[in-house]
Each structure stands twice: as C-alpha cells, then as structure tokens.
Amino acid sequence: MTTIGSVHSFDLSTGVDGPGTRFVAFLAGCPLRCLYCHSPDTQYRRYGQPTTADDLLLEVRRYERFLKVAHGGVTISGGEPLQQRDFTRAFLRGCKEMGLHTALDTSGFLGDRADRELLEATDLVLLDIKSGLSDTYGKVTRTGRLAPTVRFAHRLAELHKPIWVRFVLVPGLTDEPANVDAVAEIAAGVATVERVEVLPFHSLGAPKYAALGLPFPLAGTAPPGPALVDRVRTQFRDHGLAVY
Image 1 (cartoon, rainbow, N blue to C red):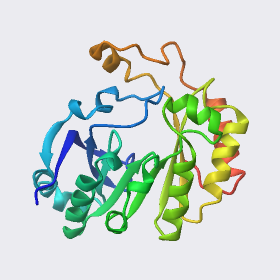
Image 2: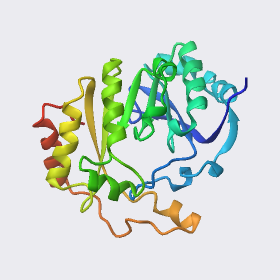
Image 3: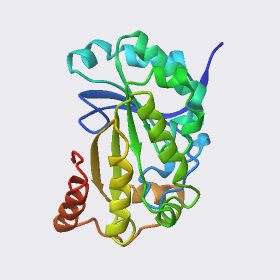
Image 4: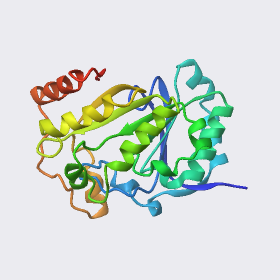
C-alpha cells in the first residue's frame, strides 16, 4: 500500500541534524505552537506537498553513496514527524534498507504514537526538550505538556536508543536557572542520552511569519549573550552531561 505524507522540503546539512552529512526531510504539520518556532511554514499539513514515501526515498537514493562516504545518513524532521507516523515509519524503514544511519527529530509530545517497528528503524533520536518545568513548557509550546516527552525519553532508554537532547535557550523565557536545571535533571536521568545541544535563540524565522501574515511571537527578543550561554552549558555539565 502506498504511504502518502505531507512533505514541506528536504535539504542536505552537516553537523546540525545528527552525525556527518545528512539528508534532512522536513514534514509539514505540528501539534505544538512554540513561541520560538523558526519554521511557521511547517506548522500545518496544508503547507506541504503530498508525497509518497517511495518518491522521497528516490530523492535519498540520489545522495546514497555520498551520505555513506560522508559518514552521515538521513534525518526526518518537521514540523513533527510523529504526527505522520505511518509515513515516517515507511520512510525510515526504506532508509535502513539502503544501509543508511537514521535519525528522528521530535519533541516527543507524540511519542506514544511511535510503535516498535518505527523505533526499530531509528538509530538516533534528536529529542527537543522545550523546558523542564511544566508551567514553562506550557508557556513555550502554548498547546503542549511535558509529561509525554519525559515518558518517551524513558521508553527510548528501555529500548537502548541513543538520544541527543536539544534545548533552545531564549532570554526571558527558558533561561531561568530552575528551568534549565529541570531539563538537565530529566536528561541526566535517561541512561541513553549521549549529549545535550544548547541552541541559542535567533529570529531568522521572522520573515517567514511576515510572509504568512502572522505576528512573530518573540519580536524584540534578543539572542542570548555569551555569558548566558556559558552559564546554561555549565549547568548541564554540572549534571554530568556532555554539552555542545
């Protein structure tokens, strides 16, 4: 049976979406509305193009040899790929059949939808932990809850799946020491977390909001300065975590 998904775009990246050079597929549609989202054009499925998993895999095949030589692989991102579970599963399985390393970039909010077959085709999970305090998590995502992400992280550990935690640092929103410590405690409590990536907030997505006729929620918010970034990275290291 043909599996069809809503695909926003795909691209090649190096060093930011998993190890090595990656073919990154961005799906359209996400249940969260994060204040710092830099891709509002991926929030709704209607912003993507109907695409079969086989057609997207044909695009991957164009780069298959290069990805292997570059010690990379394929990352499926979004939006939120678990909102399109069947498509994500079929795509990841096809990539594994090519012998490619696979990564799933997710908030974990829909982690309960990830069945065993999907996770068996996943080599690495890039887990976006939006915040560590429930109240802050709700403020950041506007529609989300923290518990599903934590539950998904522990399930991944039970399956021995490597995790790279991602945390977006936004001055005045996610930077409170208690919130950072809470994220660090979650990460440190999951045995398969290999690293934490602290991602400084930026406003490069603002033109996308303008193009869609939407207000940018964090207009006027400046990126974090070096001192704040260093403080937050130190907090994670103090919990015994490898930090990037």
